[in-house]
Image (cartoon, rainbow, N blue to C red; front, side, top):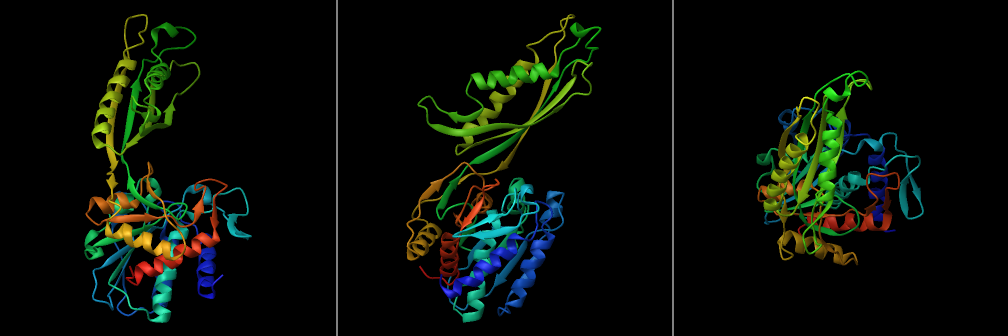
Length: 389
């Protein structure tokens, strides 16, 4: 292991021990801010935006750092998200051979502590070795795991108009050049309450209305992996929240369901949301009580994030691929169904590629970091920050 990468590993282990679930990033961002100030980088400016106020919840906004360049070159932007999923709580990271893994039955938080560590390592080397570099903007975003909220509401004026971006997030050392559009939907099935023992026939069960809708979606292939007539996957859909019921002796009068759908085609999703609304409405009218009455479905949806697709020849993609190649890794160019902060940066015309950080099995108790891969990403981040092709 090269001696100049050992501090990166120590820093990563330290970051993995700091909590920071979505909406509670104050401690981790405080640590990052203190660390950056300790580097004494000439001209460094740190500031928080008010994204948490625009989101409507959370302890703090995004932390943004700006650094003037020592090279006459266009500004570059780097990003990693500061939050982790809830199942990271109580994590104790341990080194096991070439891996970092959680000691107990928790997730690790490699997503995205590894991305933070890679960026901080690059800035540390710049400070200690006084390396030349272009102007740099860096963002550590909040609430990424709750729908890319920090990136959606970031103060783009604070970023000082970078010409390209590099988002450090994800699993293995590959490059994500495309991610989907996504919408979130909510439907409230309104049934008719009745005593389940004395007069069940007078009721309309909201649970049965939902079951009818779910069966219809499953039968038509509109749930799970969504495929076209040729069998190609065109999207994903999921119902993840179901709430309803008061007592076992009451015919359920109301049930609320929430879900999401994703696709690389916005037009496809626009058609899908109309199909969902019709399916839910049909299901609500499919069951009648003894008086011929039916329930109803109140449906609403919202766009969660925009999709994007970068050319393999885009400058940010070419530079990231080159830096990984210098570390002996030929990166795959991936188009995925997961959302990334890069969705919003690309939407705001900052061409942004996402680099995996040498991790695997995110959001699970099997999550781990592959140390040799992580250290290569750290060196790639340094190459990106110093403006080398």
